Length: 116
Image 1 (cartoon, one colour):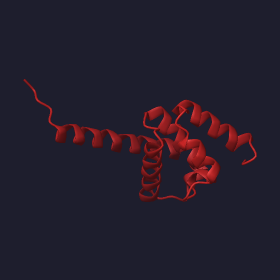
Image 2 (tube, one colour; image 1 turned 30 degrees about the vertical axis):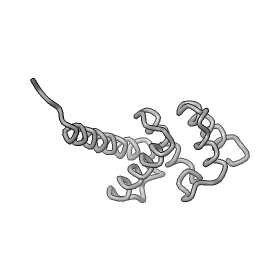
Image 3 (cartoon, one colour; image 1 turned 30 degrees about the horizontal axis):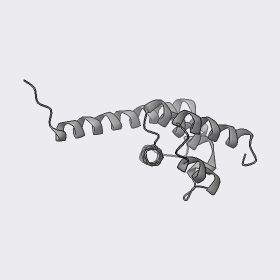
Image 4 (cartoon, one colour; image 1 turned 45 degrees about the vertical axis):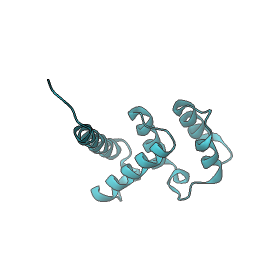
């Protein structure tokens, strides 16, 4: 019988995460070229990894949600600030918001709200 140990699971998870980062780098270069043209691969990889980590802190962990967060982050300067603006921090900390709802509300506010 095959036994998968925790270190094997960790290695598989790390491999999956790096695959996602590579796919996102390609996606950004294809779809958001103007926004990322000034970033070399090392900086783009660091950007994607940083957004993934921020998403995880806010409970955004499913690939489609993380991808959307990365797309929003590359499009809107407010999501790249450190620390995040207060209004974004309050939205992220709200435990009653699902990832879908949070991303929808963030995008609406960034595109059309008083913070656009």
